[in-house]
Amino acid sequence: MRYYETAFLITPDLSEEDTEKLISQMGEIVKKNKGRMIDVDKWGKRKLAYPIKKHDSAFYVFFYYGGIPETYAELERQFKQKETIIRYLTLRKEEEFSLGEETKKKTKKEKPEKAEKQEAEKPPEKKESKSVSKEKTEKDKAPEEPEKGDKS
Image (cartoon, rainbow, N blue to C red):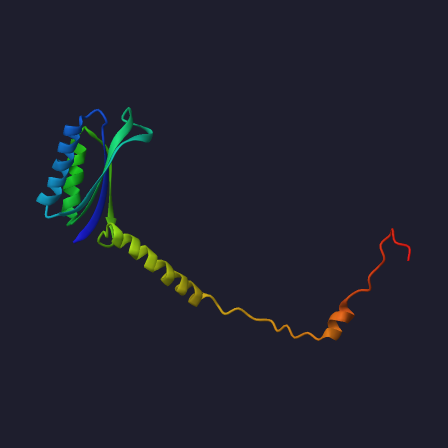
């Protein structure tokens, strides 16, 4: 089973009931095509960065699901047929989604491991010996010159 994330934008002129109905229809398409819906994330109406099909805002929805390649292909075919969906994008994920606290715990665990790997990859630094005799340092110093204003 492959995992996918699909984002799609719905026109803002639809009523809340119609929007919910459309989202549930799209979710049913995933289930009918041997898919397993993991999560539906509804962001709501947001302003677009630039106008799309003469709309300045859209209702954002994200689907997280698993399925066979035909699952997302059918979902995208349905997106093309609906005039109320103004933009969509599907990404294939490498692993199953972990939502909520599991995600936070996972990222905290990964950071120390990455730091350890980076330290292991670095070549050992050369340490210079600082055993310099006092005689050399005193000889290396230039005699101090009196300042121009001083008459000594």
